[in-house]
Image 1 (cartoon, rainbow, N blue to C red):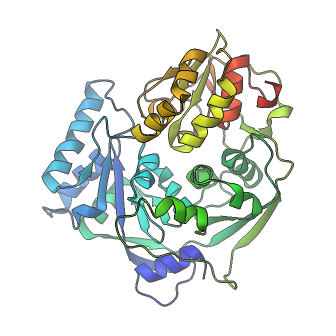
Image 2 (image 1 turned 180 degrees about the vertical axis):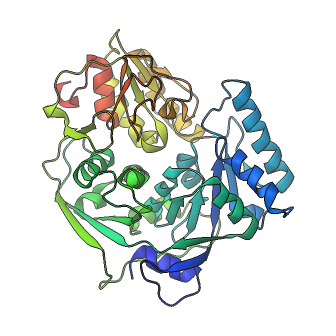
Length: 416
């Protein structure tokens, strides 16, 4: 079996499962945020049970419109806060709150071998630690809170093998954008994407989180990595409960095996209005930008900020550009502060925000006006994603986003 099949079989108390099989699966972690939790809470109330099945397995993180930007978002957060207190559920308040998909692994709340469901499509991020993690609708989350289980179909697994040594400035974001550009936004529809190969083994955990995060942008049910020494170095100091590591069998059956030689890959950029509309940065015309966003559940981790700071150090943000830097969690912020990265950003003329999803979904802290263009380390660039439907979002890694903030147009960091 594949990693995903082994995890699901173990949870369903079966010796073996196959793609297409339907299972009732006990879950280890149930997640929702300030947009999706209120819907789940209302549906939970309609089920007729008074208490969640296991409060220790539910995590609520208000991160999309928090700190609250208006009365409506304040009411949403209040509902989530009060439900968490009533049920004894883990809730992260402002000051401790970070972007959910950066925060949960950092806190050791998701571990190898887990089944994790979240009312947010980028829940697939946790596959970086060898967990089966997938996004679901808020009504599914309500059902799981009441029963402790989900009903689902076992996905097939597509194996992606990346060979070669990565060039300077090329990271996980470039690998996943290149992949989505190749297979399309439905190239892994309801499949688990298993990432492997020499180039992947070179990636630190932050780069792996980035790749797993965007599995959904290829239509994937989950993204997952086999656990190795890097994973264990990340997990061991954080884990507060038992976990099980699953590795794929040598004779595991994959729906497809797709191989890439990425030794010559250069930084990638996804043009409007699709994550699959990808080109190498060298093939772009001179595209002027109004805003550069460095952050999000895709690229708001410490390694991302280190890369951006290396490029911004000694430079100034172009006077025609607004550069926003959003650390993913308070811990990331503190680490960046201790390393002098925050000072580097501010001396360059960037604005540094408290952790929040903010502009990624057109929430707040960086909404685009009509006709404006942004380079962003976020994960989606659909029409109106970051504000006006007449704006444009270009996706890239932190190196390209930082370089572009300096030059005023989408740039290869090598020119600096």
